Length: 109
Image (cartoon, rainbow, N blue to C red):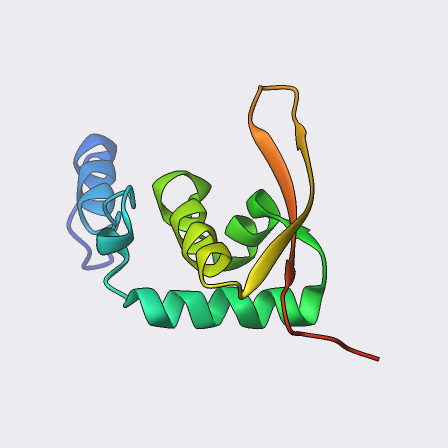
């Protein structure tokens, strides 16, 4: 007795399922995000304002973006424009600098 569904081999079914999965390309540069630098700077400042002191890696995690070549460039721009400052810096286990940033003019009581 047939239930009306055609039989499909498991190998064919698995290849059909994987072909419908959307996998976005990796983000390696600011331009890959499709967002403006100003919008990303605003997002970073908003996160730092509400979270307080953060490392660059914590900010990258909160923004769901890679630190290298994306969030580090955003932070460099914000530091240059004096929107954020580095409160402390140390070298981590992997010899990557760990900097604690805070929003420059953001004082909360």
